[in-house]
Length: 425
Image (tube, rainbow, N blue to C red; front, side, top):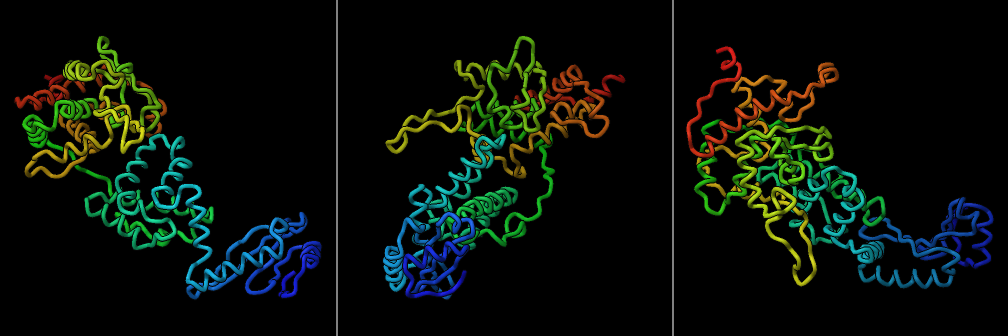
């Protein structure tokens, strides 16, 4: 039933509901609305329809019969008074609702979205958390959710691209879209400010990185780490171990001593600790064990190889705790950026595995052995039927590669002779 009735009474309301679904105006924009399901239960909604900024809008005032016709008219009268003062009453209601759930700004929205959709569901939630913390919160974190516009999204993305991280910009755009879509679905905001943005508006089409460090660049890196006092020996050991063990950054930084058997020379890396859920026993060769023994002294009995540098108990007068029990994912990146590397082209921690793989090829290491050293799964039929782990072969290969790194770390020459060449000789 649709229509308009200025002289409505409670008797009329009950009759309308008995007749089925209804949309009836009762004066000055106040509308009585009920779906078939609601009408069958004797319930409806009071909706105030109005125009603001040239657009038709509406605000739900409450439910009937909890709110009577008389009370609904009084609520509508107060809201119309606010409209005359230039206040968008629907936006005001959303703002009050967001404050009630401590989500009145982007930082609050990001936290609620992260807790509900990322934490506990992503294997590596810290990847998403880092983008939010480093790139989104500093730019628009304090901005009220309902005031975010496309220009603010563009500012976030252009700042990320400006520091040379186009891939991160693409990730940030995807996270922002999902965050604001989360808010739109719950009617906390009217529209998604990220809607309409494309990859071209962020970091552009992503291409596979091909950066790796040659021997001269590794030597320059070694010299810079040795000669830079505030770089620290712990960071230096982290770099050499990442290169020598061919593992991902967080696989090493979050590693615990319980995973290592230095006497047997093996690191048992379980599936839950790897990106692809692939367990692997990593052989520990003499140079690596030498670095690990030194690292154990620095650890001072801590369960992690790289414990958190500073333990946070209080911050701004409030109890706090470290985000990680181990070294932060950002620590090594920040330290490497401070090194005086001269003309060495920019590289990241992620380029170290590619560096290791490339040098293994130069050393004549069999590709299956090299791929297993990086814990890559062999593809196609070969990967299905060939379950051999190449442990002994990997141990010989990693020993050769680690000795090259050890010599480089000490500034000593290293005579490169490929494993295959040495075998033939």
